[in-house]
View 1 (cartoon, rainbow, N blue to C red):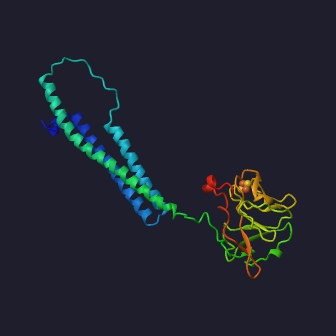
View 2 (cartoon, rainbow, N blue to C red; view 1 turned 180 degrees about the vertical axis):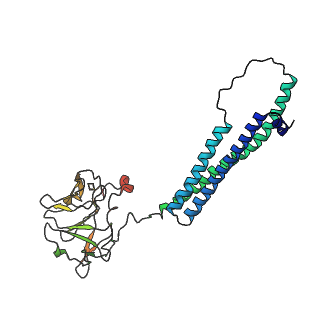
View 3 (cartoon, rainbow, N blue to C red; view 1 turned 90 degrees about the vertical axis):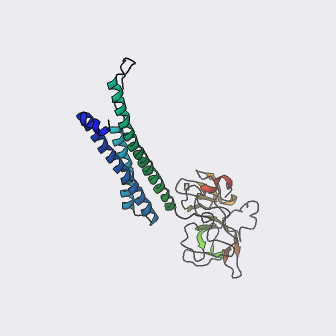
Length: 300
Ligand code: FES
């Protein structure tokens, strides 16, 4: 007896089979919508991204998988405890015929369930593929940009008006914020040029980094990057107003208080032939928080 013949003899079973087929169609449709959503999401990302479309396609992709799994669980999974009654071990002719019918119908159902499994797998794979594209959103690799500034050997130090500066322009206990020439808008280059009244104690290898009693340190706090703008000239201390980190100017801008763990990077100084201050190179370390180098650059 074929499944259709069987359906014809049992109205309730025929109705159940009809509902099952409708549920299979809805499940397939939901997974297909999910695949289309994932492909759309991938294409939108690939073409440069558009937030509204990305949201729409992501909703279709995730929603399709969700609806498919809900319908699957509702119609294809057993919901009640199954109890098997004790019965005679020997089957009657009628039971054997029923079992044969059940088996034939089960084969057809299993074939259709195989398709659903493949559709579900395809929907998840498409979504996984689409989610690889957001990696592009991270942008280009920063390379060495986070560790270098516009300062370099021979680059003049200038005021915010891009005016070069001579050593005599800074009075004793005075502080001037300087920048690399032609880069006064550079976010990582603000530098404090200080003439402390005390005598700086240079770090090993930095004996010639000061010029005419001037020292220069990055203005960006090594805690989280606030501008270190307060100079207590009597104690030769630089204070960060954000979280009160305090740096000793005479001791290589070493932090002596507060959360900053690294010295302010120092800029080597020199004077060019025209008598203007120039950098002898770039800073001694990454400016600002520099958390990517904290383990190997505690000295600043
Ligand atoms: S940013 Fe300077 S102490 Fe926090």
